[in-house]
Length: 123
Image (tube, rainbow, N blue to C red):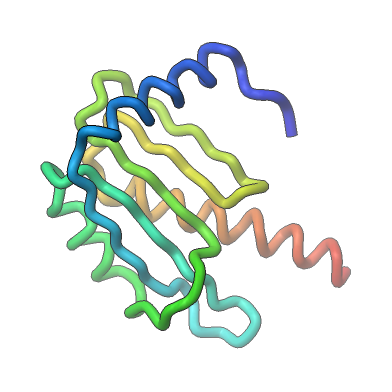
């Protein structure tokens, strides 16, 4: 995996600074009930876009507790459309999109990356 571009590092800093003053919604869900593949997912949204976590939450299973395997932070009102994915840490940052499917894809992308890594180890 490559290094982040300096412009992306600066973007992440600006986003984190922006979020310091924002009310956030956290929602946890479970993806997949197959033994060995169940993953805890957590999303954060700015409160102005409360409808997105409501819709996203209806596509997965209720939380069962535990630490999240994957985290997505969505800042739908961000003026620039961009998605940054950090697969090694299970983090996705979605900017400038209020599309629920973007959050669903973020978790699917992370699960597929994790499953592929797992299959290479158990090969």
